[in-house]
Length: 183
Image (cartoon, rainbow, N blue to C red; front, side, top):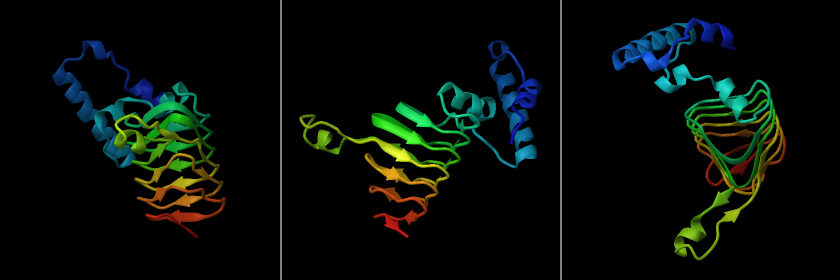
């Protein structure tokens, strides 16, 4: 795990006094250091933001983190030691969205508590369909999976990449595909 305080102390600066050239130079320095230390290259905003601070700001449990590129809307609660990957969408506008402890929500995952299809095709005459979503403890959701409104995912569940989760998944199961298959 990254030592946040060491990282912050090493890279303190006053951004208001930086011009474009200096900002670009800072980006190259950070990029090179991150590549050297963690063998990865991140978008600039991810280099200068603190995933743990954002999680704390959002009221997530201790030890959880969320990338700056992720979107959180509405009533979203996340437990302890949960990792929310880059470019995720956690949309709790239609109800409660709860994610348990020790979960890994991979890059590009989208979780919705509402569905606007009927509203859109009716020209706004129909209302959104809504439903709470819960994801248990110790779950893994693979990259680019979509979790639909009203779904309950139990504990210790593995969801495969690019899956469409549109029904409940009991604890201890593996699920993947479109339509979702539970094993």
